[in-house]
Image (cartoon, rainbow, N blue to C red):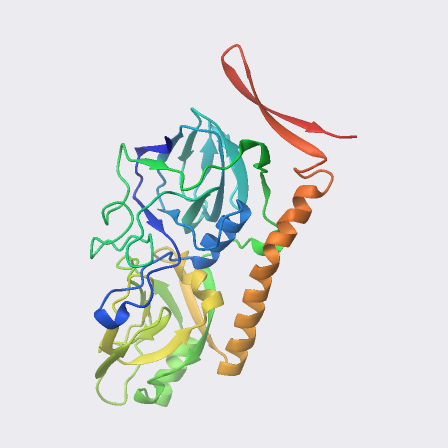
Length: 347
C-alpha cells in the first residue's frame, strides 16, 4: 500500500541517499544528496539508518498527500512547509495520517530540504544506491525526478504506537545565510597558480551564479590567475574540488560531478562545510579560508563524533518532561469527520 502520493512535483524533487560508490572507475558518478549532513540528520531523527533514501526538495517544493499514518522529518532548507495549512518548522519530525497534505509556500532560507520517512522509502537499489542521477537516468524512480501521480511505498512498516515526533537539538540545526565562509585545503594543483592568483582566491568574495546545479556550484568574481595553462591530464574529482578553467572563475564540484576532469584544481572544500554550497542560492556570497590538512582531519573527526551522538540526544529529548516520550503523548483523534492532534502530558 502506498505511503504517499505526489500531487504536484515541485521544481525538482528526487530520491537521494549518500550516493553510489565504487563505480567511478567505470565513469559512473557518485550522485547522492547535495547536503549529506541534512540527509543523515533527517534519517536519524525518524529512526532510520543514515543512508536511507529521502526526498531531496529543491526551492519550490511539491504537494504531497499521505495515504497512511507515519512519521516524517524535514531537515535542511526552510522552504515554508505546511501540513494541512499548519506551519511546520525545519529540523523537526512530525506525525502524518491518511489524507494529510504537505505543501511548501516558498523559500525562507537555503535551497534544498530533505524529507525522511520512518521505515524508509521502497526504491530499487541500482549499483548499491537508490540515488537519482538525472543526466544518466540511473536510480530513483526510472532515473528521473518525481512527477505528478507518483506513489511511494514504505520499505518497512513501522508500528504507529512507537512513532515519536520531536525537534532536533539546536546544536544540530543550521540556518543557511546569504554569505558563507567555506574552509578549504589548497591543492592538488595549487602550484599551477601565481601567488597573486592564490591571494585573489582567498581574499575575494564570489557570487553563486544561475548556472549552478547538482553537478557544480559555479562562482563569479575576481579572476584567478594561472601561471600558464589551465589544463592538466585528467584526474579524479572528489566532491568539493574547486576547478578553475581558463576564464579564471572557480567551480565547486558537487554531487553529480563527472568522475574525472582536466582543469586545474586550486583547493578542496572540507566535508563539514559542503552543506553551505548545497544550500547556496544564486546571488549568495562565498568566501574561502585556508586551513591545513591536519586541521581538516581534526574538524572531520569532530563532525563525525557529533553525528554519532545524535541518536542518544534524540532519545533524551523524547524522554524529557515537556518532550514527546514516556511523559507526553500525541494522539490523533477524529471527531465528526475532522482530525485533531491532542497532546496528553503526565503531571
